[in-house]
Image 1 (cartoon, one colour):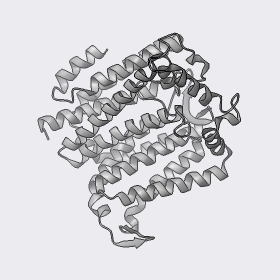
Image 2: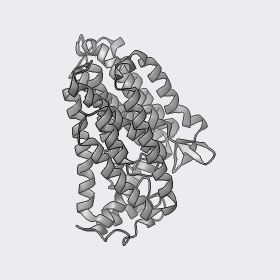
Image 3: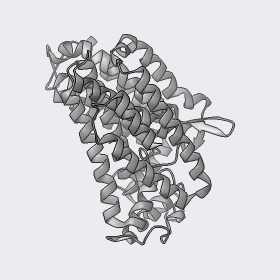
Image 4: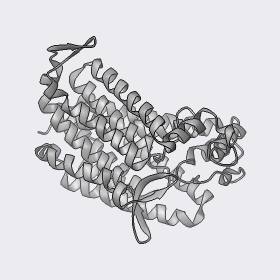
Length: 375
């Protein structure tokens, strides 16, 4: 499949960034090997989703090489994204304490995976138009120089969306991902660190209020602070994850020779722990460096972009990828509270695989367009 993608890459986007496709091939291949080792019955399904991702890349290559028209439908992307983001709260199913999935018979998917791409399109178009207004400060509030209140609407709206997501869907990771995406894109568009500071303060305030108001948030935070208060119950996953990572040592136990299957949901939330156990510190660092390099190349594409929309889309896509990777690896290593997001390209999950392949295709299209300077 990746040979087909390489051929399509050379045909449709010859001047595209040369490192993104090999990196995604490495991460997807290693993830598929680990899923085959952990849950053999799910490996075929994962391979089918990788095939669907391959088809999605080919569709993007053939239809979106002139991607500028996407900014003409910014409010459409916003409305559809909000509907997709909140749909699981009303018609979704609960797994692991979070309501992130919608099921149709044997098939289930996370609408938030699709929504994050739509939000990137909306924010890139909106901030590209309003960045000058957002960059001008006219009022001083509590020591912060801010623009007119009406221009702060998007910041307040994204804070409310992230907070409502936390309340309705019971997932801190998705809430953090969408607010973080907005703050990064807002900072890149305006160059004003005050927005990041203000957004961070609002997020901490919302999470603190949720901690005292909702028991599931309190449970997540308490287990993060001390999983040993209930090591055979609520803290079982994170305790087993820590043991698995620690037992891997420098070079690991060897593929198939560890015991990562003791971790519940290891093929989704804890696949990094299984890699660290069986491939050791060297394997874990190789994976982390691959995610860092992918993010770096995405930001490099943004730096080389000749127009605001392309620049902001590339920044948004790279930020989504980086934030999602950090959130899940941070959760499995107990750096931050555990969340329900998946590790891009590696975790089992159809919607995650499909949307990350589309993310890859969009970055390749933007990099090829800017390299050839075709408007």
